[in-house]
Image (cartoon, rainbow, N blue to C red; front, side):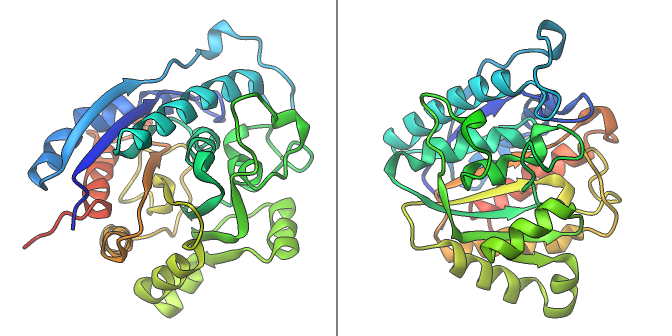
Length: 298
C-alpha cells in the first residue's frame, strides 16, 4: 500500500563529488515528472523545495583528504533538519540529490528518534574515511560517517553521528570497493551483497535478506545511488561502473521494498544531467521512486 503523504526535499549539492553536475539532479528528477507520477499512484505529495547548498566557485575547497567538508556538513545539517521536520509532520521524506554525501544529513535527521537501519543500493561502498580515501571526495565517505568511523572531523552541532549500527546496514549491488573499505567490511562484519551475489542468488532473496538485516531499529532508510544501475540503462550518474542492475532488476528491488512495508525514508542521489541522454536517468529515477513507494501496474 502506498504511503498517504510524501515530502520531497531537494539537496542540490555536488561538493562531495569528483565531477560537476549532480547538483542539477533534483531539478532533472522533478522535470521528469516526479510529482505527477506519485500523484497518479495515489500519493499526496508536498514539495518542500531545495535546502540551501553552496557552489564550489564560492568556496576555498578545504582539506585535501575531505574536500569542502565544512560546506558539506553545513548542508547536511539543513537536510537533517528538513527530514526531521517532515517526519514530525507525518510525511515520509523523499530526498533528491545531489551527491551521496547528503545521506549524512538524511540519516542524522532520521536518528532524532534513535539509531536505525539503512539499505544502501550502490555500485560503491562509500565506506572510506579521510585516512583511507584515494580521492578526497566526501561522497565516498557517507556510510562510514553515519557509522561513526570518520572521527571528530565530521562532528557538528545538529548532526547525530553515528546514526546507524553496523548490524543494521546492508549494501546491495556493490562492484567497486577500495582497500580501506574492504577492511571496514571485514572488521564490522557488514552485510555486503555484490553484483555477483545478485547474479547467483537473484534479486528477491538478496533484497528480502537485506531488509531483514536493516529492520529492528527506530527507522528503515533506503538510499539509492543511481550508479547501482548499469550505465547502459542509467548513463547520467556521477561515477558509472559497468555491470550494474538491469532496468527490471532495479524496479524489482524497490518493489520488494514497498511490499515489505518497512520504508520510513527514501533517498535518490547522483543523477548527473550533464552525462545523461535526454533525461533518461532522471526518468528512470522517477519510476524507481514510484516503485519504492508502492505504485502498482494493477
